[in-house]
Length: 303
Image (cartoon, rainbow, N blue to C red; front, side, top):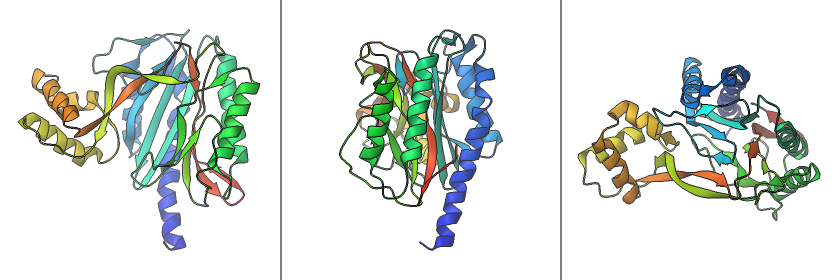
């Protein structure tokens, strides 16, 4: 790829990051008061579209022991309370670029030290990143920082490489030390996202049965006409990016037929499911995240 083409593509990532950064500044005021989380999610998704972009995935609003993959149902009655530790994780897709960012909010300040430890782990990781450094080295920085602050990293969650149209591009940056499996290259785009919990936590997450987020897989043999319609709609509208059941029901209605179609799409592996992830011991989880572009001597933080 010519240098001009590479920079042109990276500019889309920068614009996606700028949109995310703008919206992130609004979040604390959006969360204040006992807000329905579906209202918060739809506010963020609407703001992304108002900025001329699309959500790169459904807004995740994960409360307390929930670590990831919770996006509200269409008629969700859960409220974000001031004493809750609320992780808001969202992404922006603009042209060929994607940004992914997250922030932990606790209005009551009960979990302030945990949140600050996650932010420090992120800060230290980004200070250590540059072309030629290995992903295992950054994972070690994240783990050491979290433990030095008196908390536990979540071992089975990680940051990830991002490519055009591809949110998770096959290279991970875990929250615990590993051997280097990849060395950062100039122009790479990575989302770095420390997850951490209390000393009493197990330090890893497990699946809950609940699923609200999906992505396209290979189309199986679909018997139901509604299933075929939903598959083609998702393929056209979202391509390889994740989407919410809430978005599907807004388009097709929350009917029995739609629910049956979703079951068939999962059974035939036409859709991939992303179960809600919770801390094994039920302890609270914090998260911090930025998307960065790797440079020769450091990183460019775009969110």
